[in-house]
Length: 416
Image 1: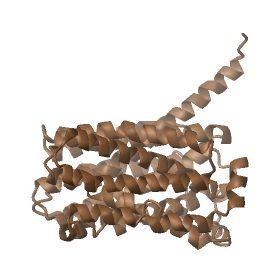
Image 2: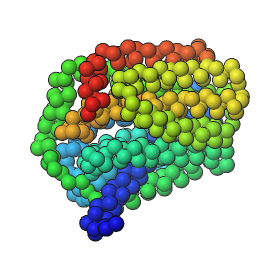
Image 3: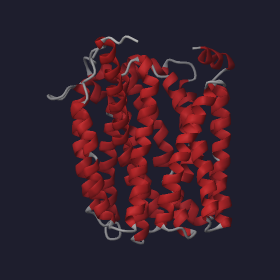
Image 4: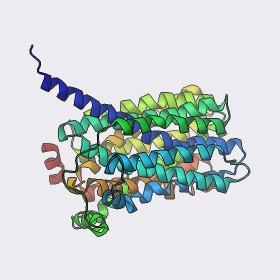
């Protein structure tokens, strides 16, 4: 077989871009659970009230409203590294400092200071997400985008796994403060990736004014049929699953599991179940249309949430925990695959950064705002009733699905 230098260079360039996608995903996934499950375990250890722990989900508000400053990051260009890498480096350095600062706080003595610093972590993390999403869309060709996005998601999950599973296991050996300082240093992986990655070409140019950066993508979206119903669906589709996940760490600790057991089974074992779910979901979507995928995967997500109520009655059982975690993570991976595919399919390429920020912000509302009172609810109605409630609350999203995706649309999508 004959290989030309030109084709080899092209393959190397593609491999390099895909590698960048993976490490950027890792950098985005690492901070997320440092303000959720790891912080919850730290606060539980410090004796913080369950209601306060539940309310801490509000520090994730920047993930929900990041579309507000996404146009600003599109409009202006830093004086170094270019529009995407310049903002990315700024966000990552600020993120490293805020994660280190979170490790220097004291949840037991000053939970509100913890909340403030955790809010800074989520703000800079959300900013990083905005830029990485835009970078990935602009750097990868249409042929590379599917596999590149898959590597980004897998990198994201590796980052989440390291922060949550690794963090919880380490918590039985070292202080939480040192864990946060350690992960602040791990963020250097993202900084190095930003420095060595190429800056994407600005083929479409930049918006000439802030008004253009804000109004045009919103105007294009809201002139579509069922625009508001689509936003409602995105908000509600994973609401039950997300509400339940918000308190799983305190739940596991309450029924007798150690942090090492949680880190090993829930995070490490659950990680591979999620990966498998994503692959299975992606494979099934090649066979069935997106509407059916969203519907069947949504039902499975709801059923898996009910598994936590079953685990409550089983009690401390590694086998029971493994079964519930495997099923929940498997179905969550399947649902996320269909969810992400649907969102990508309704994003206009001309306004990818701002529109994707808008849609992904809505994805974060259940995790941030609606999940805030979950601690209060669980405390007052009990764990079993709480997880049954989370199961039932998934139903409205499934009903909306049949309003926003007509049968003809699903056939056209499948044919593309």
